[in-house]
Image 1 (tube, rainbow, N blue to C red):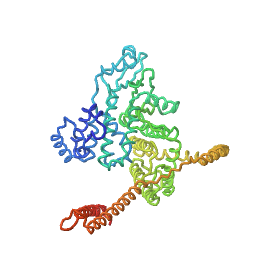
Image 2: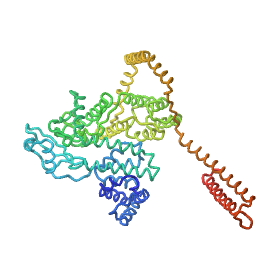
Image 3: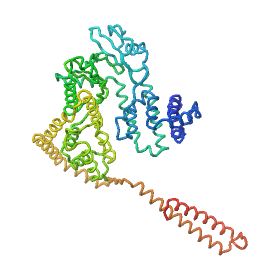
Image 4: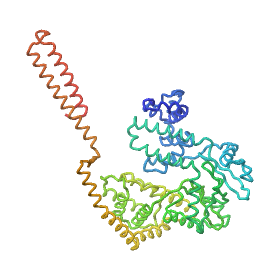
Length: 564
């Protein structure tokens, strides 16, 4: 029952939404899971009809497509959750990954009057004071916001991204419910515990609440523009921060052609080959030089302007790479080019702070060797990031290696642009553009200047340690003198060991009590203590019966655990 999990208040507060979510889950063929978890008890559920639909759904479609349909039907929060999971292939099966990548923000547009009310409320001015012209017909809609075109009083054309009315409250409620359902499923289905729902939901909550604040996207645009200031071949739209708040974002309207519209690109006298090369250089500069890159470069988010200039749109999803992650990626690429599987295995193990101590290095090296022979042919020239992505992710997951933050977003971004580049130029290979960046980073990593800088830094730390050492020793001796030193010993399977010992001790104690009961009953029988039955003491008979029952119970308990 859902009420056994301390969720009564929230259940009643959001009863309608709970009922809606459970109905949709059951409708798409997951009624058994809901019933086993005990969360099908809410009023208003037509279980007979839902079970009928559930059986029909189960017979027509795969479990993965049904999961995707559940996400789509549940609305904005769950669509965003599904999209986030599609960027985490180390957490979900490939079949589900493929389905979640199909998730679309196919949501209806809300009335323009509502958008106007939000704009006027946020900016505390009438719409006519803010814009010379405002298009009542939205030019696009997504799960969190919709977009209108407008004109400023200075004549500049802009687009206005307006947050959906009440979307913050809807998302807050859904996140509460997602946490509740995840907790229940983990309690009733132990198999779900391995997915670590708590971490997934925490990351999702942090990201979606950040996405609900459009000022973060405005800041991303400004940082991106600063990184590419005076850089040829790229144009970053202007963000009008004076008109932007947490709920609305006003940015320059871009009149270009989508990078996927090859025919229109050629009609405008532009060069697809130059565009592909420029795009690759810009993507790699974001990754290797700035460590701040556009993480969703699908065709709808990349426009081509005059003179083959590229313009990225939608700065809500950005990747961030530390210098060590960039060096890690460069090392992997160079070692892949040289076919050095052993060194790659060492690099993966060293960089992954979460890898298992029981990591089988020989098995890891063998998997990497197979990856190289299948895809690389000892050369970066043949590297296709799109085709090796799943194999590389598989190596991480099968060896329990922790993936660096945003590393998958990086690979996904490269794979997306590889696909874009191939449409523009059939001979396009982003790997050819990666090679010089990777070598440059590795050259910098092993440069004498950096080596001397690290020696200097280590010397400063050593001097500081020597300076503080007498004080630290004095502090330690003082603690030892007063008996305040605590030693914590932690063993990975100590709880299991203690449980086993406790069960063994209980059985031994139980056996001693049983033996004592039998001996005591024998003494009572021989002493002929009344009351008697056929000259046999009833107390002794009762003791033997009770001992027999306990003995059989102990024997059954031992046999149940298959240990004698």
